[in-house]
Image (cartoon, rainbow, N blue to C red; front, top):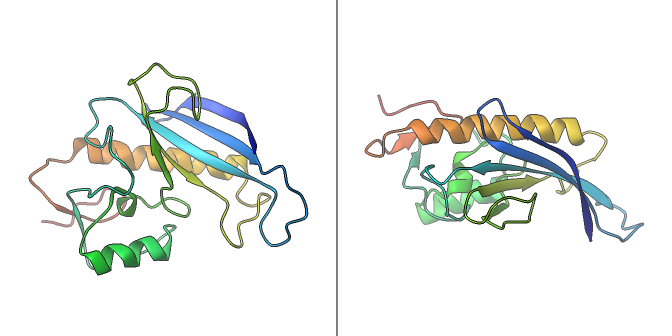
Length: 170
């Protein structure tokens, strides 16, 4: 499996982001494409989710009327069953968050311990790289960055929010 950096930039929210094109190296698999795009947004060390896994408890509670949006139904239902809200459940991004790491060389080179990455992939059943293309993935990164920025501002004593930064605890 190989990957190439399609775009590496600073989002409107001020976070670093990257779009990668991944090639499986296997052709003719049929239903699932041989190559696809992944998006990543890096947060700084002062962000409350820095160093946390996308599957860690977020400390927040989703409101009962929160739409599934672009997230995977399985992750939403799993959070409902366990009465926990994982970090990945908070963000309305294509297929849910599927990656979290502070790796210094992936998805793009960074200094050790300076950036923590959250990412998603466009490699799900019925995804089509002509639709979930580089531009689509870039727009999803911008959306994820804006949502991450909202959680950086939220007071830690308020525990209920809807996806996308709307405060439903009022």
